[in-house]
Structure formats: structure tokens, C-alpha cells
Length: 316
Image 1 (tube, one colour):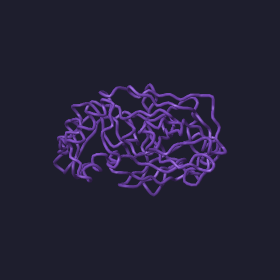
Image 2 (cartoon, rainbow, N blue to C red):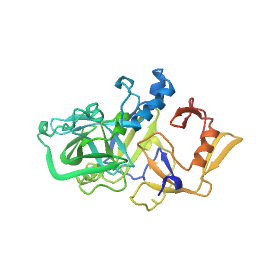
Image 3 (cartoon, rainbow, N blue to C red):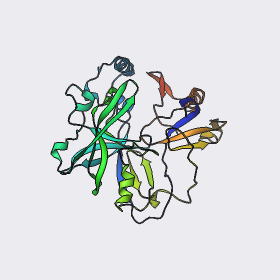
Image 4 (cartoon, rainbow, N blue to C red):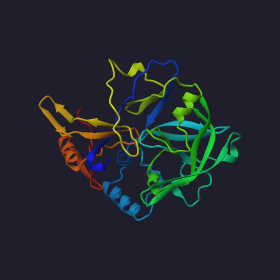
């Protein structure tokens, strides 16, 4: 899968449906997009451009009071005993789970602005002999792998593995979560996905999860689907083979409708779509994205050349 042959869509979706008694429902919250937050604080769009140009050179020019990278749905978890609180994003495009470590350098802004895991303050922490390392662009996300107690919405999951990272790339300065719990189709060898532990410990019956997003709030259900959020029956799609494996499906075409007489089609010859819960953008072939932006009358705010819709119109 390449960027130019696929769409990445932040979707409201359920992986599949089961009738299960044991499910775990987790509330989700949403924060403003970075652009919305900055505009609310009267930050001129030119400042955004200057910020990103400076960041590309390795600088951090923006006072933290702006707190402008706010575009994720997130939930609160606790790790260890006693529990250490973290705000995390459950992301279907990530294979791994990680939170910042207390061993971060004090010079690391992207680490210091986050809650940090301290294994010495947890009675149940076990440091494994394994290191964790992911390369993101020219930066590294790196640390050590631990097993510890996870508490999520009041439910305890024992011996949950995750990485406590002491190296965090600059790009995470612009995110409001502490860490990420991966819900990807594959996983890192030494980090057991939380879904597998939930099933093994009989907290859920089925390896099924679903998301419901609505405005500022939403929910994630582990082990099934909340029947309050759908009518009728589900349609099932095969997952497209990819390397690495992703929650990717084949799409025949896409139709956008603004009124009865105003419609456009993109992805006319078919395309692959990645189901992502960790972002707020739609990515795809430049020709199709330009057509979508033109159709919804998005305005260029000089945000690295990207277009943003200022006021949501009725588009389906």
C-alpha cells in the first residue's frame, strides 16, 4: 500500500458484530483540532506556517500555552499499583503500545509535557530484557518494555505489556495524549495487545472491538458492539493483504453529496481505504483530494498548503 493508491479514512466503524455478554465499554473524549484551537486563541494562520517551518529545522518556537494540537479521541487509563494516570489514544493504525518514561531527558520538551511512567513507584512493575524501537522519519521512538497492571474504566488487566519510552520524536509535541495503545491488525513481538489479554483473562468473550464517534464524545467497546449505536445488519468486508498488515478494505468508489443535485465521485476505479481512529484528516491521491476540497469549498489557510473547511456544511 502506498499513499498514492489508497485513502486513509478516519471512520466510525465496527470491526464485526457478535452477541457477547462480556464486553468492556470505554468512554472517549475529543479535543479541538490544532487549527481550531489556535484560531479560537486568535493565532493568525501565518503563525502556523512559521511554526511548522521552524519545527522542520528542529526548533520548538511556540509557547506551550497555545496547546494547539488537539485532534484526538482519547481515554484515561492507569498503569501500575498504585495506578499512574495516562491519557491515551486507542489507534487502529498503530501496532504497538507505549507511554513516556520517567527516564526521559529533562531537555526533552515532548516528554516533559506528558505524564511519565515510573517503574520504581509501582509494586507490580516488571522490566523485561527487551528494548523497543520504532523509527519515525528522522527520529526515534525508543525505550524499554514492561509488564504491569493496567486499569481501564475500572477493569484490571494483569501483566499488560507496553513500552515506556525515553526517546520521543518532535512530532508528538503537537499531540495532546500521553501515549498510544495500538489496535492494529498486527503487533510487535514482545508487546501483547490489550485485546489478547482481555480475552485470555476472560474479561471479554470475543476478539472484537468497535468505535462510536459523535462530536466531542464517543465510546469504544472491547469484546463486541453497542446495539444502541446501530440499526439493521452489518455488511462484512475482507481485509486487504498488506505489509505490514492493516485494517484496510477495498472501496469500489466514493460519492459525496451536498444536495440532491450536487454530487461528485472520487476513487472511481476503486482504491484501498485504511480505517484509522487516530487522526482527523482524509489522505489520498492528490487529484481526488483536490476534487473533494473544491466540492466542499474548503479554504486555503496557508497551513503548509493544506486546505481546511472553516465551517461545516452538509456533506454526506
